[in-house]
Length: 170
Image (cartoon, rainbow, N blue to C red; front, side, top):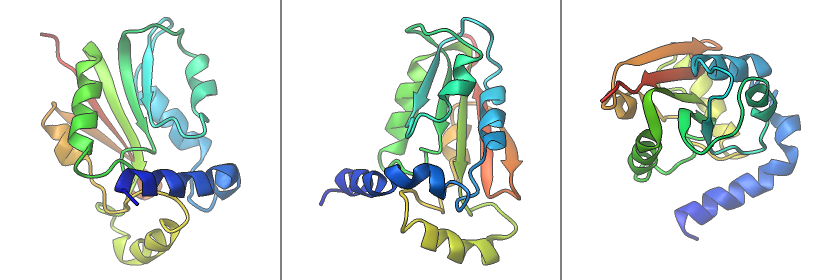
């Protein structure tokens, strides 16, 4: 089975149980709100969410913006670590190209690469990835740093993170 097919099959297996499994993965509304807040959206802004999964961020986005075709913000929501490593740069570049100058690209995701609790959490994370897709060793800061200055906000003891890069004009 091809890598993308394997990821899709794994997500399809967990999707019906996603809401029930969210507490096991420590996924909570606070971290979703932090990611949406990091986009600094205004009424009328347009957002591209990469990897919408179950669409659980939609209520937070709908409270803030209307739909358009150009993008003031891009959100990788718990999806960056699921994208195969060799495809991530292309996905990031394409999202960046669609972002208006002054717009923000935000990555909300989990991983154990930077946490101080790595010795404790890494074995647990490896077991959890058997339930759902994703690579717990993903650390997008290097990919994002080539785009501009990265602002990093840890969530839940650095297990999850919200990274933001602003696209400079011109």
